Length: 244
Image 1: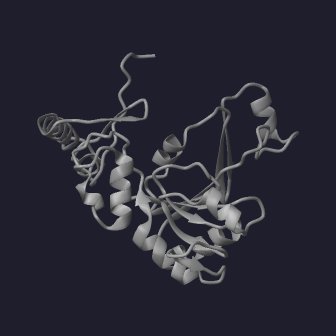
Image 2: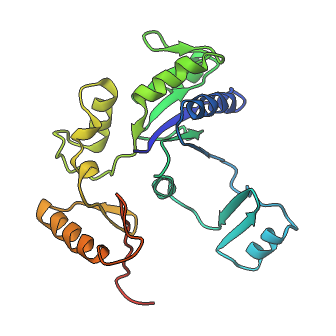
């Protein structure tokens, strides 16, 4: 199950060094790790003017893909919500997000330099500080990577479906996430995340009752049983309402 943690701080605070250390340590422990960098510059582009991929985009391409022997880069020329990006990374164990000071519902490591920055960055999802901190919470040095990774292993949260269905006994997914963070609840208490079938419509999770889940699972499983190469633990089927 994908879990996420935010590394937040102001410019030149050491966020990237913290992310680098966490990635190395978590990979060393056998996890599949991804990162997302929040860039606040309105006109920023990772592409380079004059390059072939840049020219493709200038011509009007909505998505530009560059394939090289050692990597594939996908540049999408449209605003994209964070939960949509996270959904494409669900095969990972951890995603570390750099920046995202206004993130909600995700465990956060704060990298402040002053007490004033602490007050601006800290929130109820903060799990640790690096460099400068707040009394009563873990405050680590930049080189205490193993200790920080231990905290991430214990406290990083999965991305909740944001249904606020209250099946967990809490009023909202945010309240439930805080309960998990404090040890008062377990991730397994979120019923939609444990469901046999999860339905997404245009990226939004739609709750299904047990009867509908069984019906979909049994019908889909019966169809797959007659197809080659259909053995596996998890299946994904995309359906358009109208043919294009």
